Every structure is written in C-alpha cells, then in structure tokens.
View (cartoon, one colour):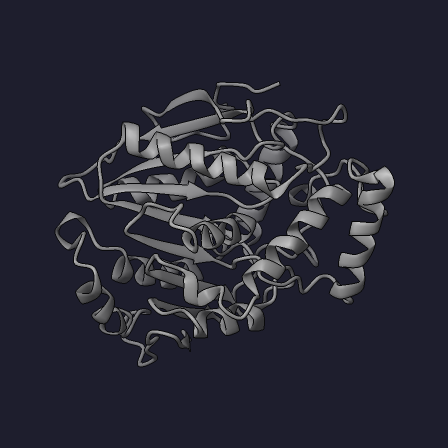
Length: 351
C-alpha cells in the first residue's frame, strides 16, 4: 500500500519544510512524491531527482540539502514497486514491475507534477535505472526539461557475465509464467544492508553505514532482489538504448557521469552511448563505484563541480543551441583546476 509520509527519526533527519503527497498515474498506480523549497535566493529553477532501482526518497536527503543550497526547488518521487509508492506483488519486498510502460507512466506523472507545481527552468538529476528511463524519454520528447545529468545510467550490466543468455532466459521464464518470481537465488534482503566489504555501491564506509541503517530501520520502504519481469524489462530498455540511432535521438542536452570502478553497470557502454550524443558530454570519475552521490567527499566534490558547470540557472534557460555550443567550455577544469575537458560527444576522466 502506498504511504504519503516521510520516514524520519533522530538518526535519519529529512530536510526541513518538505512536503509529501500521493499522486496517481494514468494507469492507476499511487506514487509517493516529496518536494522542498530552496534555502537561498535567487531561485534557479527546479531539479527533479530520479532514483534508481531499490531506492527511496529518504536516501537522498543529503543531495536534497545540497540542491536547496544551490537555489533549486527539489522534486523527488518513488517508482512504483519501491519506497512509499504502490506495490503490485503480495510479497512486497520483491523488486517488481510488469511492463516498461509502467515506468514510463510514472515518469510522465512526475513531469506533470513538476510543470503543475514548480517554477522553470527544469532540470533532471537521475541515477542508474532512472537515468536510463529518462534518456529513453528524452528520445521521444517526453522529458520537458532544459538539461539532464545522468549518473551511471543503466546501459549495460557489468554484474551479468553473459548478458545475451541472461536476457533470453529472463524472457523464457517470463513467458512460462514466472514473471513475478525472484530471479534465481534472489530474496528479500536489501542490497544496501549487506556487508560493506565487497559492496558494489560506494567506497565511503560512513555513507554506506548510514544508508544501511536507514534501509534496515525503514524496512517498509526497502526492497530486495528483482523479479524475472523486472530483469526482462531492464534488458529490453538497454537494448532499446543501445540501438544505432538511440543516442542521436536524445533531444535534451545531457551530461553523463560514469563511475570508473562501477561493478553494477557498464562504463564502456556508457562511454559509447555518450560519444554518439548530439548535445551531450561524458565524464568518468575513475575512483567512484556505482552510487556516485553516496561516494567519498573528494569524489562528490568533483561531481558537484561538474553539475555546477553544466546546470545553469534561470539566466541561462532557453538559449538552445548557443547554450549547447558553450557546453565544452563549461566542462573545462571541472575538478577545480584539472586540465581534462569533456567536449560534446566525448568523455573525460577527472583525476
């Protein structure tokens, strides 16, 4: 059942003055939304936070605070099947979605809420699965924002040794009626609660411990491993985005940031995609693991330098091709004096 409330206690403060509510997609799914006003002036617009698989709004409290201090309204939401949004399996710890169109409906509702309730210009900051869904939406004019920052987008899976075989197996099991079953060997344990040693998400032990405690305490918001249907949909989405013209079709100026030590998604696949973008750049943070926003301070500082260079405020909105042409210059010395430059259609590694 969907829940229109924050999880918070003394150990897990949610940024103050936030609002939380439920809204319903066109196909009837109840999603949990949250928003915050900026803490400084001038107001620079609105950033929509788009999370990855198995995440929920409260995990991004630190990021929300950092965006507010930059002058942005922040809008966040939980995908169906996770967090405080509606779930569609009896065993609610399963990470399940039936069809890709369901996630598309979730994103469409988020864009509608953004335009209805918050001031432009609009920006997206998206992670992993969410970044892949947003990139796909940007191909079809379904992402009405000025710019997008896509963190470790799910364009290929490093953790799957034989992806083609895994995709075929997921489709076979789906059509045999096992779509709602856990993947083989899967269970209820949330990935964020597993031991830090050898984790795929971050090299920062403090932030990992914080998120692990949060997932354990807010168990009703957490989920475990994905279902067969989720895996099938993930492979279908990745196949769509790896098509020869997919990157060329992306209509939103995009900064793609990849993690050089990512054991979850494929950094080479991300770089290949970014190289084909017409209005995009790629940046690789060599020491980062999958969850860049949950990384060590030094890595996060490089991310925020890139974000601040790429995401303009209200004065820069609507400049179209002129803004895109300036993108290469904006990306120079992202890490505070570094010489690497990410130019449109290329990738730079920030030391």
